[in-house]
Every structure is written in structure tokens, then in C-alpha cells.
Image (tube, rainbow, N blue to C red; front, top):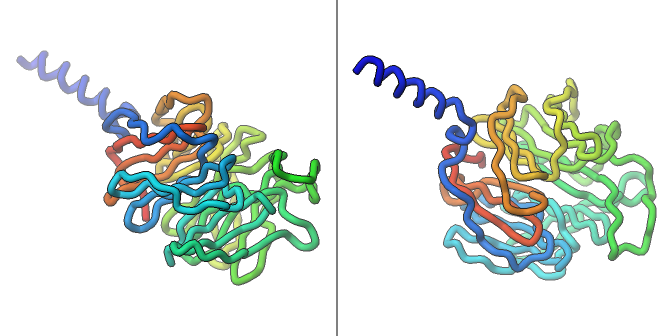
Length: 290
């Protein structure tokens, strides 16, 4: 009996140490596959998820009632999204390389169109801090709907927008992309997908950044964070790192590319995954943050 208990204990310990047992509790569920390229999932306070189908120029809504509907047509070829504390969608609208603020009534405000005397490359992903500062990445990806064939500025950079002003925070990237911050507003994670690296910054009280360091040797398209501080990276499936930069899980996704992720649902306990022409949900053992 003692030996049996010993082996049961070893088995339980192995399960506990498995990343899969830590963060996931179910299998992927297909929500829809009628899209061209999905991106930018972002949850509102109720847990409804908004996401983009960029080639078809739409923002979709996946409600907490599991209904899927078009939220907005002619959506500025929006890519990354984030819901701010006032319930507005902040959108990286790269049809004309702009940063938008969209109301739930589809009202639209253009927050920023460029830096100094140059238009943006194409705002890609965005995070809003608890203090209301909007951090976003601006890589260059040539779009077939642009007339230009080269960037107006050479820097592919990280910016912050606040009270009508845009500041460049860091331009030491090959191609910045995914971005997410901690719910306490103390740390910011930014992916350099062009250099296969994730960096972590400390956010100062004035919104500026310091203490940049390498967090993980992997790039990412979109990113999210859970209540335990684990960071979720995308690309080939979803890869999960703990807050110390150790990989604890990899979630396979049946698609050639996983573009972005967020937590949704009334309890923030399912992972919403955009994967090219498909979107999936996955029930989790952990929750996202509001």
C-alpha cells in the first residue's frame, strides 16, 4: 500500500509540474472558419471578445452568449485591438496608418496619424495601461491596399500616445509586433518578431520605460497575460512562459499561423485564439486579467 501511494504521489507531482495541467483544462473548440486572416482579439469588461478580419476590413464580436456577429464594417483594416477602461476599442487601423478610438456605437475618433512629420509605418498591436497611456508597435508590413511601396521613416519603433501627444520610446528593433503589459501597470512586454526576441521593460510613473531586458528567445505576433503573470506568445501555436521567462507550456493549434490571443468570457477563463481563417476557444485552469 505504501509503495502504491508513493507512485500515485509521483504521478500527481508530474501532472502538477506539467504546463498543460497548469494552464489548460480542455481541448480547442472551433468558433468559426469563414474568415481570411483574423487578428487583434480584445475582451471588454463583460468578457465579450472583439477581433479583426483584416483582409475583409471587418471587426467581429464573439459574445458571452457564444453568438458571432459583425461589429463594424469598413474598419480601417484594423489589426491589433484593445478595450480601454472606458469601454472604447483602441484600434491599429493600418489602412491609412492610424490609431483609432471606436465607441460601441461605432463612433470613430482618429487619435494619431504619424510621428513628427512622417506617417506611421502601420500601427500593429496595442495595449492600454491602467493610467490610460496607449502603447503600440509600428512595424512595416507592405500591404496590397497601399499606394506606397516603401516606408516614410526607417525606424520600426515602439510608441506611446497620451493626451494628444505621441512619443517614440524605443526604435532598437528589427520588426516590433506583439505587446502586452501587466495589470498593475509596472511592466511592458514587447515582441521583436523580426529578431525572435521578447523584451520586458519597467514602466516609470510618467509612462516612460526603463530596464529593458531580454525576456524570452522567441518572437511573437500577438500576446496576452494571465492572472499568474504567465505570458502567452503566438506564431506556431501558443507558447506559454512564466513571469521568470521559463517556458511552461505549448498549445498546438491546427493552423499554419496563430496570430493573436486574449482571455474572454464572463469569468475570463477561456483563451480566444485567432489563427488565420479560423478562431478557437480553449477552456483554461487560469484566468485572464481585466
